[in-house]
Each structure stands twice: as C-alpha cells, then as structure tokens.
Image 1 (cartoon, rainbow, N blue to C red):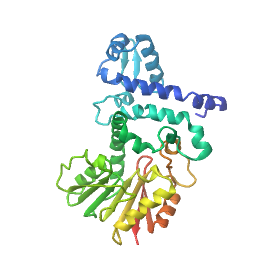
Image 2: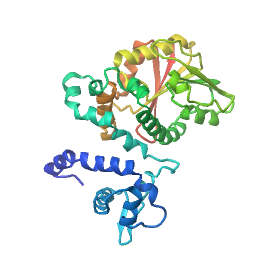
Image 3: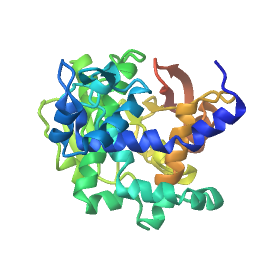
Image 4: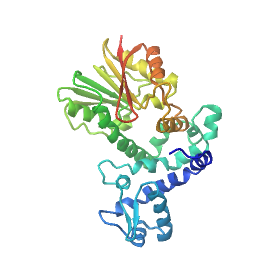
Length: 328
C-alpha cells in the first residue's frame, strides 16, 4: 500500500532511529541471550547490562519492524532476529555493528560534504581512506571483516545458483578477502585450482587449508596479478571511482591470456530501474569509499576502456548481477 506523501517523508526523516536502535541491540548482543523460549525483559536486561525499561522500548521498536516478537512472557525470536545471534550460520550481527562504527557514523554525519564535492566523507575521518584506516584500527577491522563475511554467506549461494564455473581450471579471486567465495567455487568444481589475491595483511590471516588453493599477496594497483582462466571480482569494482576501476580491470587484462573470462559480481541494475537497496548501497559507496554502484551499461563501458568485452549479464536471485566479459 502506498503511503501518503507526508508519511513517506516522516518515515525517511526518522529512519535513522530504528537503524541506530538495531545497531545498539546488535552491539549489546541481545539476540544471543534469547534461545527457543521467550525471555523476560528484566532477565534480558541483566544479561546485557541494560536498563530493563529502556531495553523493552528499543526491542518494541524493532518488533514493529518484524525483528523480535514481544509477548506476555517477554521477548522471543523471529526469523529476522535469529540472524542477530552470533552463532547463527548466516549471522548478520556484524553488519549493523559495522554501520554503527564510529568511523562510519562520523562519515555519514558529513554526507553533505560528499554530495557537494563528490568525494567520500570518510576522507574527513582519515585522508588515507577506509582500507588504510582499517589497517590501523584492529577492532573496527575485525567487525568490518565479519560483516563482509556474513554478507558473503548469502551472496555466495546466489552466485553459485546463477553461474556455472565447471569449465574453468584456474580461477583467480581478485580482492577476494579471506576466500569464502573462492572456497565455495572450488568445492563446487573439484577439478579446478584457485588463486586468492588480496593485500598482504589480509593474505597473512588466511589459511590455505586445501591444496588446490594458492595465496597471492599484492596490491592490484602496483603488483602483477596471477594468470588464470577466470577472474572473479566480487564487490571490488564498486569500491572505486571510474579511473581506479579501469586501472584494476586493466591490471586483470595485462595478466590474462586471450579468451580468459572476467566476472564482475555487483549490485548492477538495468538503466531504467531503481532499487532502494541498490541506491542505498550507492550512497554508502559515495560516503565511505568514493566508489559507486553502476548499471550494466556503465560496467560495460569500463570493460571496454580496459580492453575487455562484455558478453553476458547473469541475474542472481538477489540484487547481484554477474557481468561476464572476455579478453579479446
């Protein structure tokens, strides 16, 4: 049902309140103290070191959005609130915690800077940018890594359901973090070998626990990339502006042999589509990294500028698209 115009504006103007409430509830670990039965608010508050009345009011707000269920006995889980448990296999607890980190909230407080200048507001927090900042702030880096891992758990299933990797013998995951996607692909394709490429601090924290996985540390702006039949770049290009994105793709082009496949996996949209989730992520990129979400046409232009040719676009069950290109 469509909202009245004033209700639409009111909802957006106050959206920070449920969002911030979710971040605090995730930070307190409230969901971890609820199992299969409802928990009284006094008991829950004691476990979370919170005021019972204030905690109840916060949980009631989230319950109005389908996160937790309140009853006479106290508070119980919904499918959404179970995802806030730290031990859930698809846990998303770290994602709201990441959005509530001091560096992120300080950046969004300066969103006007990004809209006026087109530059990331995060540069007012740290002129060296997000990734340099995380290397110097281990606690926030840990939350960031956990958030990216939890998001990947959902996205990986969508990618594997939408693309056949079995024709490749060597698959390089560029900027692949700790290799969650690459490991899942190698599990699906037992005959393939994988190369995980990321910055040295990231690679140093990864265990090469299967003999078909090679770890390759480096910086894709300055170091040569590995040679492979296929290159995966999952939510890498969107971190960068067009010039840097083209430089990354050009580095892939320089390392690849003719006929190699490049797979850009991002929340791309058709030129005439608007998706609130994608547009929200686009503003996050603008504010935090200086990157952007792009349409399939925009990605195709970047590929062309790097000497690559887009040949197909695969829609996944979620917001992600797989833009498939080849080296000509």
